[in-house]
Length: 84
Figure 1: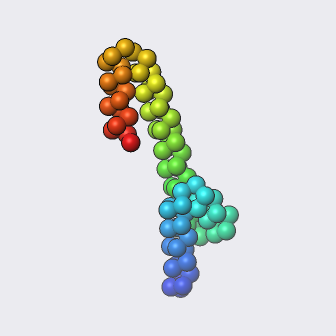
Figure 2 (figure 1 turned 135 degrees about the horizontal axis):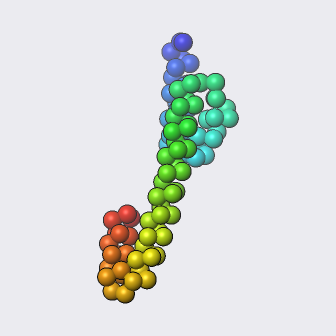
């Protein structure tokens, strides 16, 4: 592998990671034959999915805790402040 090809592969891997889901999909469509780029694109997609699931879970937990009078409201505010 020459230096230019390796540099291009790393650039596409960087784009896949920084631009999360959009960059990862573009990198997978355009440069799927690069193993290094494909690895980082899949990792970026996985990270995005986990972040979305965590965000939804925290929102649901905060909603449940806010229903409980007084203590639930305080805990909901604390969790919201910690996760922001």
